[in-house]
Length: 600
Image (cartoon, rainbow, N blue to C red; front, side, top):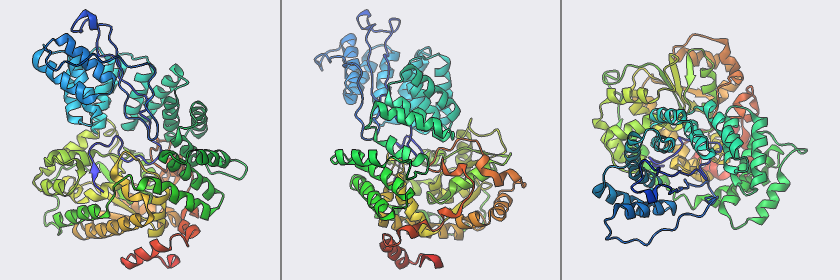
């Protein structure tokens, strides 16, 4: 599991906001055009389409003029650059912009073209640099600022992205595209109230655009507005029944019943789209969820396996790469330190909640963030991004053995300070905040040195339930965080690596990590909550027992579940699939993973 620098989301585990159809408006206006002939030129750029959906072009792109590589006429080069951008020829657009920057006077439109082309080619640093210049040269263009904010958010520079998005919003953009794009940016920064407002405005402007409806529905789910979310999802399907991810979102929105479900629609669509991997993925997983609700477990598991296998071969996953990374981490932090508090930043604000995904991390986040002194900052990639930047590693993955090796020369105090600074403005208004990115368990050695006063809580859950929950969940497809999750035995092997790494962290970071068992939290909620608050240095508040009353947005797969009180129905769920999980059981046993008495 090599963690990529180019992820748009940290680890979104519910349908993430779609970027389909989000375009870039004209960079040219009469007061900045290279010639009056180009003053009325317009172009659009389709952002990365949602999985399984073609980019929608509402009007034909401009016809590209014949390219004369020897021309030095800036007007002609600029026309070619605009046309290349219209036709999604990012390399050509970037090359033409480079030539203009070498031969023509500084120009905001040229910088904008270069920045958008770089962003579309996932060259985030270049995109940020060019779009920074474009907005500085013409600070009155909302579209320039919006794309600059988008580039910053793509690079996980969320504090800066929000600042630029705020400036763009102050310029008064009123078209649906700009409003939707800003909504996506605010969603990435966990500013869900602002996002809902902008998505609603986009839908009001263009009610027949399916992607706008989808984004609004997803943001409403994060806020717990499930009835309104359901209406928007159905409106999305009324516009486009092949918006596949909506079917899965609807199945997950509530528990299905024999009287109210989507089985007939799902089965009909699945039979009609046997040649479409995205359709097979989302429809099979939606059927698996609904059949599980109806206690049709063998059928559910069959659809689950079919859906996941439709993607597994596309992910190029190797558990050996994960093993190499985990080994590198254990070798780099091989023994306890005599002076663990010497080097880092002294902030005591962060509480890191880590663990295997689907192990109860969101539940603990909701318990803690219902405390008056604690704010939930969501799942942040901030620490990972700052570590990568300060390490000097130039490899594409966000975390790999090269990054681990280079991090030994890092300034730990600077890393801690940079992490805290880059969580703003989302943090700092309460004494403590929670960062609940589960995969931060990979960074515990670095976190312990950079932030010696931070608290670390690790969730542990029954191994079979953990592996099954990872298999049942479709995590974000835009990140390799979860490439292990498309095969039940790959998940088992990943769990073994996780278990060994956590045992290692407990040995080399004595006293730094509180392990909380999900089962204990369910069975003895108050006792476990008191232990949790005491470890975090927080006074007792009864509100922590009423986490379901926490009205803060939830942008994870548990967005629906955590709004209900604790029930024991989630315990030993694996038993519903006992025969199907026999190979997993054998794998875990062969690797020495202790199984509970009820698991044997």
